[in-house]
Amino acid sequence: MFGICPLASGSKGNCIYVGTKGAKILIDLGISYQSLRKRLSEIGVRVEEIDAVLITHEHTDHISGLPLLVRKHNIPIFANKDTAKGIYHAYKITAKFKIFTTAETFSYADLIFHPFSVPHDSMDPVGVTLQVGRYKIGVCADLGFAPSWVQKALKNCDYLYLEANHEPSMVHASFRPQTYKNRVLSRQGHLSNEACADLISHVFHPNLKAVYLAHLSGECNSKELALKTIREYLEKKEQSVPLLIAHQEVRSEAITFF
Figure 1 (cartoon, rainbow, N blue to C red):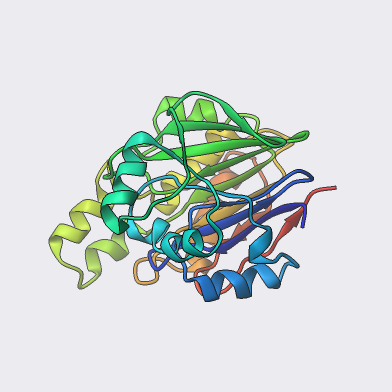
Figure 2: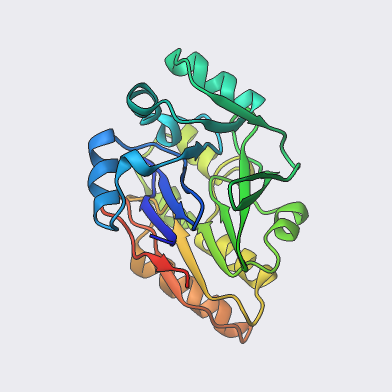
């Protein structure tokens, strides 16, 4: 498949498939090998065809599927130095790490990557843009707020995958511990629905084709609320773009490039 498809998105595991004419890669791998195989098969891709995995940061919901994939297929893992250290300390896996430097562009096959720093409570977390032929894709989840350099990196994307994690009032009303609430709502935590809408508004342009709303909290958000909040915010700005939900338990709608 030539395109993009979120295979899982949320605190139980994250994984995005990106396929080009020259490579098939994953961004993050926080789901089981069995789930990966099943969800890839639904878009006509075999797990044996995956060429590489790029990891944005070392939290478990982004890396837990790596040990078995590496053991079975020994494919390269792209990560910055601190994230690679975090992966090794978590699982002691011997992998073919390809180390990139945050904020420095690199290429692989017919893909051009630009990893950029994001504010989150891990060692050296990144978002990333990918140039796929004439298309630019922005992937940016797990961040507490969107500083100017994040907005700059996401300018002129054709497709976006952005975090819309929670509704603050639902976080405050939840039965989660106060430490959890403080973390999620902090500038090193996760983007709210309104913060996601504000980020979309800042990087909006007439050729923006679609936005995946990602990493929705199962307890402190809902698909309906995320869509409503973000659509209403954008309508006030006289901006409109198709919004898609990146699901947790099933693969999401795929976008095919032609």
